[in-house]
Length: 315
Image (cartoon, rainbow, N blue to C red):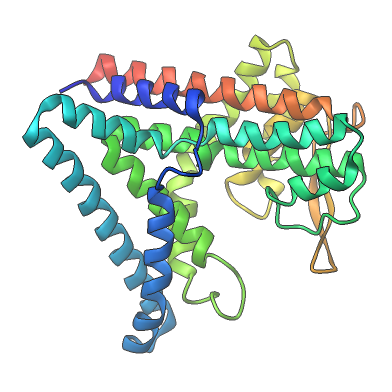
């Protein structure tokens, strides 16, 4: 069998080459459907909502881990080459760098064409805020924030867990991430049921976020951006975000680009003021979307090389 770090590198390259084809069955979609299918039966069987939510987490993680292990073990039993192929494909589905950059590129293309309504529609695929009245700088802000926030759960955290645990580790991470996006809301329905999903997602992203933000500063130096600004804003503003993890990379990206992120958003017509990150050294322009995408992809590649290199020499 091929070493895990080589499988991860090939899977990462496959994501950069192919992205996320819509026709390809995706494990994350199956994980999400399983989570939703379990919700009602578990609520009926377990009266305590928090306990029912914990049971949902355990059931989804157990099913995901067993399925991933069975697929890889079955392929290896047939032939080592099949085991390598299945492992690489499973790992490939866990990375979203090409897709994230592609979403940003589509927003940039609409803005470059002067089609603000289309840009609003495209940024709505990335963010949860109201987008129908956003001007161009606010469309750019939403896009850059989404790229910065999703850098960890879309690429660098899956890379870390893939290097640590192969396809099973990467898919378990994606299962945690999917549980949080399914149940981790502070609504009346999910405040207690989704408690375990949200807390576990915070826990598994704690280390990846704190490894990624400094790498953003290093990558900014390699790309000729603002490495000192990235480090300073990461340290100054990173913990101002409501999430214990998302704000770290968002602040680092704001500093690297020399812009200010955060501010007033609207959700279903209701205003929500988010902490501001970075200094407004320059106004937000559509070119910042491309800079953010390059920063995300290069930071992710640097994280991959770092994690794979450490595993190669220590394991």
